[in-house]
Amino acid sequence: MLQKNGRKNRETTNSIVIYRTNTDEKTNLTKHDVRKQQLDLGMLGLGYHYIVDLTGEIEKGIDIEAVGVESPTAICVCIVGGKTDKTKINKEQQISLDLIKQFVYQKYNFNLQEEYV
Image 1 (cartoon, rainbow, N blue to C red):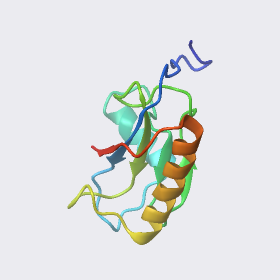
Image 2 (tube, helix red, strand yellow):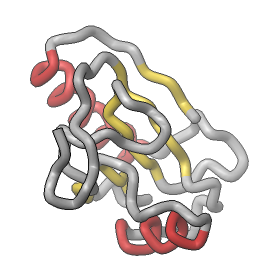
Image 3 (cartoon, rainbow, N blue to C red):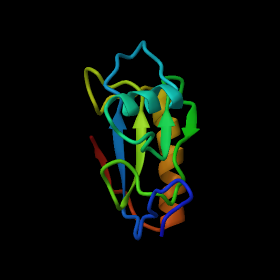
């Protein structure tokens, strides 16, 4: 089924994919900055369900039921930073990521399955 914005809805949800902006740990980005990056890369716009900035603030991206970036069965989370280490996030970001995971696992009733990209 297509949403009003032309995106398809996921048929199934079975994982969380964690993307990084590949920026340094001093450069904070907002949802709008990430959207601009994706447009500059030739994408059709923001493809993440949630964006977590350096302070741990969570910004809602695309609709939770929509297919995200490159993954038709996953919730896509973008965490700002990761230039030196994709898996290293600060304490505030970890707290926010844990909240997102808890919500997603309860909503879609599946266990921990995540991947860093």
